[in-house]
Image 1 (cartoon, rainbow, N blue to C red):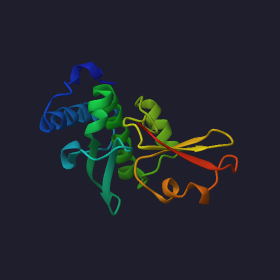
Image 2 (tube, rainbow, N blue to C red):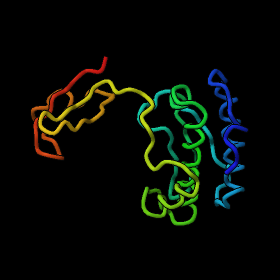
Image 3 (cartoon, helix red, strand yellow):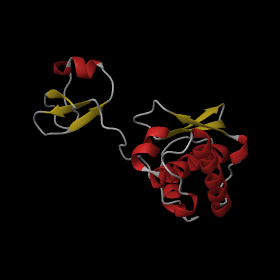
Length: 170
């Protein structure tokens, strides 16, 4: 794995600087691990709206077109978290190219472990609401208003069947 510190960039950088470093880092990861990813053929973008998803691969007809990274993850968790997300998305692109498989299945999990990245990203923005089960204490993060947030009494916990209570995160 290329040393992450070599690519570290200040959180106050411009979007263009961050994307440039992300592409250079991605190219080195691809070369070191023999992934079937053409970094230069992908459109690299930042999302300023993403709150739950640290990254995404956009594809059409099984062909990867772009990688979108969450600027907030970088601002709140730093370069190490962003680098992990880049490796995660490169695994997706590789598996789309090799197997037409965008899932987080067994092959993804194996490659993610090899590239020392996550299968699911760590929360990088606090949710607006917590939906909590009164019975077992299980909780669900919600970032937008939804039927569950507005009418929790119409739903039950998938874990124990208990009732939900909504708490606005301050």
